Amino acid sequence: MPNEVNDAVMGCARVLADHDGGDVLVLDLRKLSAWTDWFVVATATSSTHMRGLLRHVEEYLHGLGVDPLKRPHPAEDEQWCLVDYGDFVVHIMAAPARAFYELEKLWFEAEPVPVAPTGPRT
Image (cartoon, rainbow, N blue to C red):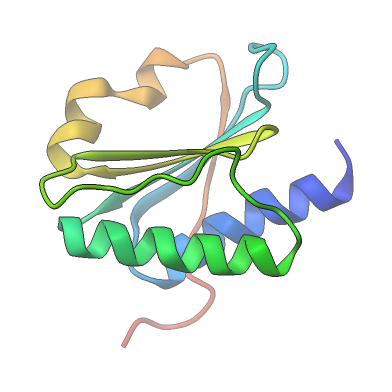
């Protein structure tokens, strides 16, 4: 995998973790999927938090020259925001949606990489 993609994926995950995204996880799908290589998954505490996490991710990745294939516009009651960046897909989910869809179990063969915040939470 090119370092640029790896840096974007792991940086995106750190941005989510640093902005209080819950249980941030990167799933390596390179051996399992032909349509994308990575999932970045995080839990949001509310629709407002979800939109904030999305904004932070978009700002970070845009600064790297990486833009989504199509920009999502999550509604107020949205439970899942999926952002497709081609080589990787970002999933920002409300806790009930994450528990229901269980992406980690669906893609159980993927190698999970947990991502913690880079600094202490305030």
